[in-house]
Length: 253
Image (cartoon, rainbow, N blue to C red; front, top):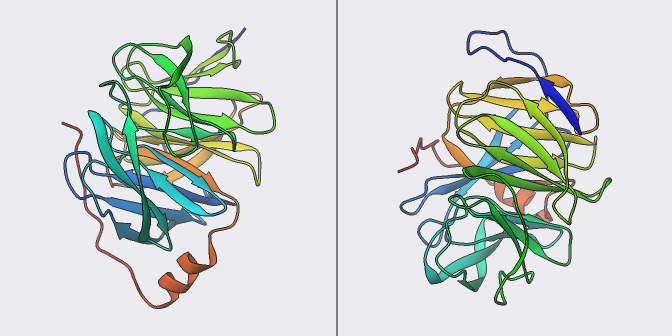
């Protein structure tokens, strides 16, 4: 198991890192929040949710699929170009999950309280299959398509951990991040992104070595995050029409 500790002080200088792919981050857990789209080191657009608390997010070639973070039978929505085109009904057993990930055939979540990682159908459907137990207060989760592993980021201790699909702990990295969330794997350049909400930064690391690659200032308080290599055409069209909304800072209850 690899263990690496890199302290990123809140006052440290940021670097000129920029997203190669497109990172979707969710902002607001208690109401009709926003999904922001990040690219090239900044925000290029956002859309408002059609439902409340739609924090867990996965992004595929067909768009974004978001679910409510808590409660049984909660309605979430699927979005293309920022427009709700369908719904999901996530019978999640009452767990609290603020982020999601996908390998293209399953959606993965980590329970905020227990750290249990579960697999669901691609519409957050099914009863959920427990895969393993990560760490309590793990909030971010993402799937590394090159290594076939899962990463989690912890809200309390700032650690990012890499797991095999059977739950073997492969690596632990500590970046000194406070209230870490919005963990996303970008397959276009094989990097990980996460939001240090305490330091108001988006940070980038190498998932293979744990090396810190840089970051930039970003103030919205985001919890869920996922990457897409190329955005759906309707998203670009919507952005071209100026469908931008003001940044809304939401704090986790």
